[in-house]
Image (cartoon, rainbow, N blue to C red; front, top):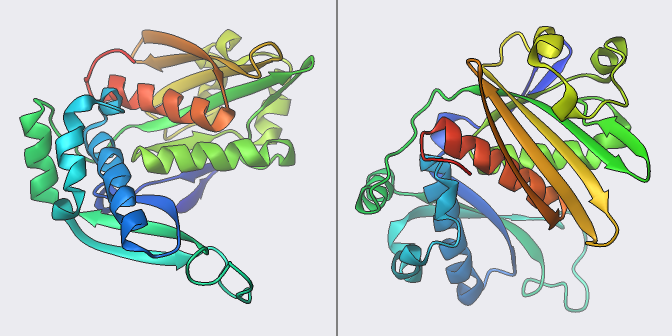
Length: 259
């Protein structure tokens, strides 16, 4: 769901969506669906709890092998809807968005068996101040700047995946503050607080392209109630950087430890 507050765009994931996950599959065959259920089960466990450390956790292998037992429903959306079928792009090889709904009680029980609690709604609204630096050029990811269309979409997808509400600044707000060339980790919360009147915490992210690693060097800083947490990683796509950045923030905000 999308909302506008002032000049900021908010991407939200409603509490009722916490027990749903989505992935992309090729065709509607049972084998692909079985693998998708397993991947979605991991996503839902992380989404419901905020515990990003569950990613690739070996303890999830047994329940993932029987992931269908946790599913209450699923739905396919044809990514090529309205386009004619041709050659191998028939029903077998067509790409679909698969949305999977899981049983709330069984997911909560599985988390309890892992000594992890659900992280209930309402959750904090996160003000996101993210900069991208490549080839000597730095820009902020804004709610209405075409330069950051791809990054904005990726941030929103990462937020929905983790059950988070995010707020992005508008290009005019960044311009008025005269900080277009400033990296986000050099920005003080007080300087941008007026951009995010409804936000509870601020998450700052700096992504710098590294030619040697063919990936982004990423630094994150979470500011909340006067406390700062920092973490970093390198050599990833910006989509992966956003998933890890928001995953780390969720882990901290849900009291599941450091990223």
